Amino acid sequence: MINAIIANYKVISVLGEGGMGSVYLGQHIHVDKKAAIKSLHKRLLSNEQIKTRFLNEAKTMSGLKQPNIVELYDYEENDAGCFLIMEYVDGIPLDEYIIKESGPIPTENAIKIFSGMLKGFAYAHKKKIVHRDVKPSNIIISKDFKTVKILDFGIAKILDDNNRNLTKDGTQMGTVYYMSPEQVRGEALDKLSDIYSLGVTLFQMLTGINPYAKYNTELDIYLEITKKPLPNVQSIYQFASQELNAIIQKATQKDKKDRFQTCEEFLEAINQIGNPTSTFGATIITTPPTTVGTPVGTGGMEFEPPTPFWQNKNVIVAAVLALIILAGGGYYFTRDSPEQVASAETIVAPDTTVSTPAGVPAATQPAAVATPDISAVDTASVQAAPQSVDVKMSVSGSDLSSLSNRIKEESARILSNNPFLYPVGVRLNLASMSFSCRFEERSAPTNLIKLGLYFGPENVGCESCEKVLQNNAGSVVLASQNHGGYDAQVIGIR
Image 1 (cartoon, rainbow, N blue to C red):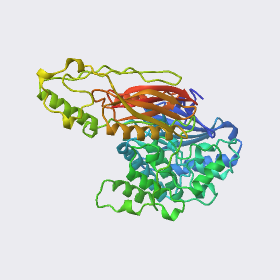
Image 2 (image 1 turned 45 degrees about the horizontal axis):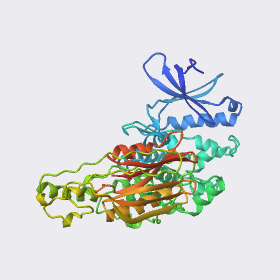
Image 3 (image 1 turned 90 degrees about the vertical axis):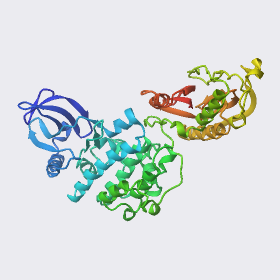
Image 4 (image 1 turned 30 degrees about the vertical axis):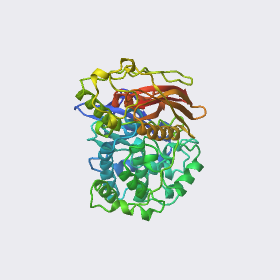
């Protein structure tokens, strides 16, 4: 196909391939204009029914003129095959953006993207067109989020109407994750099925993973879709918006009459976020946080945003202590840079020494510190040894996500009670999904607010680990391990 001329467009390269065919980048031979050219697979060209449906898709798309829907330029059928010539969008599919670049998408950006999606689907629904295959891979976005385009109207209908005999066993799994209860039951579909699928897509945008990704068979997924509500987004990613979680729960109600009835209503609920007069949240059926694991190969990742300094109680304690000391003689803190540790086996954390400011006895609490008497400074106490404290931590989980949550919660509880503690004797064992350490009291605040377990697929690397370290200056890697196709690190967050 490369260099072939299709409807005045020269085929330049392959953009993507799928079960129905391939998509190519085309350049107009007379004017400076690019196009995405979708061709029907050669093995399907002899099937007149499929060819007719491919043409019907072209007719459907030709009637859609809206900024958030990819535009159809032309349709061509010749000896080489059947082709849709469509608007080319210089962007990235939403699923790739989540897996490779963002992980959980911050609320503000998620709203920008999703609002464009809802506007496009609202327009299509008014045209009495149901997409039937709503999922992140059918959405393409630009890096600045100003361009949001919906792809592949009609493809899901082709697949559904052909009784799945166009696909090999298991190939439907990429779509079933987003199906509505009525869709998995084989019932007639309307726009409310798209709204359910949009709710699942928003869940993945906020958490980085699909809520049904841990299930391996269609039967298991069908049972979850038809019987159980989606988990709370904060059970997957603690910084996800609880207001958007309420909206997701509404959109994914099992009984479609309990969902948003239009995309406009869906969008209005999102626009009301932050409005103190809105009563939307009070009408939403929500579920308590549950733990959903991240299966091998799903690409789920965790991210930690930087902690605002005014919310970090250890920074405040250290600042108060520093001011008191400076007032008494201009003494200052110095601290060695923590050493990073990396090993594929169980890790023991380094013994990082933190020097003590002159005149401040070990484990001094800021509120009890008086202005130091310079003449009474005991030079022997300047490098006081760490104090012996009996603070131990031992947690376990059923999977990476649950273990990560346990580590964060328990370490935050311990460190919030004593800002002078530092973890030593760190033991990470992903084979048994367990973690343990003890906390040693240092002579100056360590500024640690919690520990966290972060992970990513080994073929991509722990991108979330890198982002945590970039966003939280002074954070330190305490343990590293590879297990089950994932790279994981325990990081002390400052």
